[in-house]
Length: 377
Image (cartoon, rainbow, N blue to C red; front, side):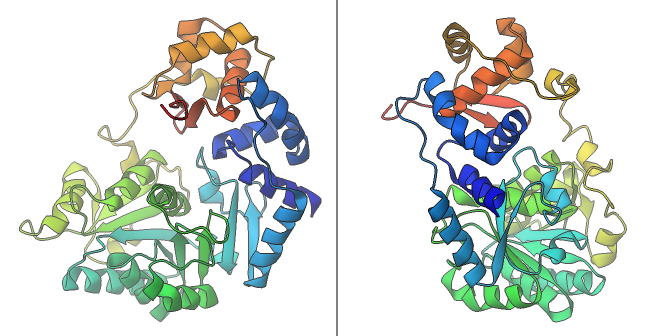
């Protein structure tokens, strides 16, 4: 229980993102040791005050509150943590699950689409989800209005569904879906990355979308405009190596232009559940549509990826300053950074970790890093 509390504390610590969380555990071996090192690391990176870390009592109260709702926390590395989600570079360090965690690993398929969906779009999403759930698939969606709600409703008719929400477990959104969320928790699972009491802010939805994509072996897009949040989920799914599916729609309907474009670019066309089941991988990293030239990253192998294990060094102030000076708000490959600065991999990775904990840089998926604007800039 002590390690579980410390892992939650580290996950909730100021300036510790999902990627930094994993690197801290790898470097120090335990959450407690990583927490003890945070003040020193942040100070080395240029932070005036140590990052705030919740106390053991605060973390314990949050665990008790989630358990009081009937849920539980699952940390990355726990056997119950969804294997597909764990493959993400920026997998949530800790998720709160209300319902049956086993549903998360039951051949999950995401269904997403327009909030302002047509009657036909909602009917198709509900029918597709019903048939997939009947075939033993866990339908994953975001509890939003429109396609999401239709998919959850269809899956509940014949099997299980998973709702990934942008706020805390105790803050249903939209409010009118509180009853739907409760029904899902009784027969499926509700997943939240954010702490209890957190309202869904705009910046939380892309994070929620990556959880939908990360949990799923494949994602189906039903009705998505060209500037749709559903296309963000689709891109995240492709970046994670998942299969992408799209339902064709009328070319006269603006709500279908984005999903139709996905088919044009190579996504599997879906007319019924059979089209999904026939192309669904058994493993999230199986070769598939995500490896098509349009979506694949045309880049040489990463030096970081080729390293047998992450190693760290104690960088000098000059090293940190040199690295920070080479960064900008535009994400940069860490491999390119290493080649440009001609420093060792251990020195660069340690310096980047310290700069991130100081709130000066952000580590992104794809082995990239970007400079953060100074407060008040």
